[in-house]
Structure formats: structure tokens, C-alpha cells
Amino acid sequence: MKILVTGTAGFIGFTLAKKLLERGDEVIGLDNINSYYDVNLKYARLNELGIAKENIEKDSLSQLNYTQSTKFNLHRFYKINLADREAMEILFSSEKFDVVVNLAAQAGVRYSIENPHAYIESNIVGFMNILEGCRNNNIKHLVYASSSSVYGLNKSQPFKTSDKTDTPISLYAATKKANELMAHTYSHLYNIQTSGLRFFTVYGPWGRPDMAPMLFADAILNDRPIKVFNNGDMSRDFTYIDDIVDGIIKVIDNASQHYKIYNIGNNAPLSLMKFIETIEEKLNKKAVKIFMPMQDGDVKSTFADTSDLINDFKYKPDTHLSEGINKFITWYKKFYR
Image (cartoon, rainbow, N blue to C red; front, side, top):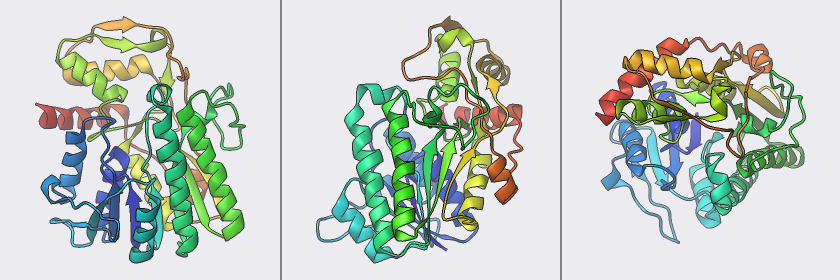
């Protein structure tokens, strides 16, 4: 298949692109490489795909220039902003994809309070350009990233895709809910198969530096205290990156319904304190903890009901927390030290 993967400089997009390339798919990567977090990490991910920083081409108004991978013959990369309507139209019309996987977005719950305009530009305008590209170029299947944050103030757990999701408590969550509604409209009007994936907390090698695993590991190794929100009384459906990517690929390969939303997570929440203890164990070093109140836009607990993904695709994440953290810490020490 010829697959567009947006966000290939990002954590999940990079890992997915690499897995697809290794199995023989043609993958067109896209990212704007913004500075929300360390761009050196983003360029390092791209380099693993054979896209060297110094080779990345910039587009012009008349045409798009791509960078050919030096590691994978079937991989090309475009540096494009999703919100650039003209560039996106040229990309879709020239490349003619079979499947589109949209993982590019302005991420981060707390940052959406500080910089809301970035979320509208990337997550709303950018997603609109993705949908229009699919409509105008006969794309067979659109798979896109939603988020567990859409459940907002929902008190019932585990979170089910049938639950109401009309109480988001961050702009990030609101944009992800908007994506689901926009996808439903395009599925209905233009007969496009769309699959939305509500990601729960993903961790592993090449992860984001603004997420808990990286923040904790960096602070502990450098003798800085870690911030533990809600006084540690929190839990997350922590899911290892390889399990997440396996689930995405199952959805890519087996579009089962006209419009579908899936939870994708571990289906087994763990306490934040247990997560910290496991990192301490793998680092062989105790953390100095500063206990703090709940942050605006955050939720106490997440727990994914993944029964639809299990029933439709036999999805079964099988990476134990200890194994996943060990792989993450091994990568972290190698990459950062």
C-alpha cells in the first residue's frame, strides 16, 4: 500500500512509519517539525528513517520538494504544515495515496491553555485539509488520532466509546472531539471510510520529552525533584509504543466500518506512583518527589475499554510495564547520555 503518515517526526508517527517500511509498504512522511519540544529529537527520529536534517527540502509555491530516504527506497519525506492548504492540495493530487494516517497535531493538554491558536491552526484547519484531500482524491481509508482526553469529566470507567464526550476540559480535547465530528460528516457526505483512534497514555523509546516518563527519568538522573500532581492520586492506562503501533496497523489493514471510533490502550490502568516506582527501579535511584495539586485541564484517571478493538481485530497489548520501562530507560541512557 501507499500510505501517507503525517507527524513522522513525532513519537507515534515515527514508530509507525518505521514499522510500515520494514514490512514493505510505501510510506510518504510529512511533518512541519515545529518547536513545541526539542527539534533535535525530532530530527533524530527522522534520521532513523533515513531523512537527514541537512537533506530536508523546503517547498515552494509552485511545487513541493521531497527528501528521499537513504535507508528505505519506499520512503519520501515532505516538510509541510498541515494548515497550508495549497501545499496539502498539491501533495494529495501528486502522490495519490491508498490510505492516510493523520497523526500530526499540536499536542499537549496543558500547553493548550497557554497557546490556544496553535491548536486551532493545526488540529482544526489542518485536519480540514486532510479531509478535503481525502474527498478530492478518492482515498480508501482515513485513520486519524483522537485522544482519551475527549472523555473529559466523564466519571464512569472504563471509558467506552459509547460514553458521552461533550464535556472536554481542555482546548486540546475539544479539538480532538471536533475531529471526530468532522470525520463523521465526511464519512456520511462523501462515503469515506474513517477510523478514529482515542489514544491513551503512550510511552517507550523515542517518546516525547514533555511526557511523564521522560520528565521523570531526566529529573531523577540529574538529581532534580519530580512534580507529582494530585498528590500522587492518579492513574493512567499506560500503553507501550509497540502495542499501540500494532493496533494502528491492524486498523489500517482492516477497515471494517464506514465510520468507527476505537479506544486504543492497555485496558489496565496503573497508578502514577507504581509507574514512578518502576522507573526508580530501572534507574536504581530514588526520586525526590514534590507533591502538587491537580493541574488545570488534567483528569484523575484514564481507563480504556478496548473491547471493540479486540472484537474487530483481536488486538491484545502484551508488553508488561517492567519490560516497557526497561526498554525505554535503555534507549534514554543511550540517546541522552
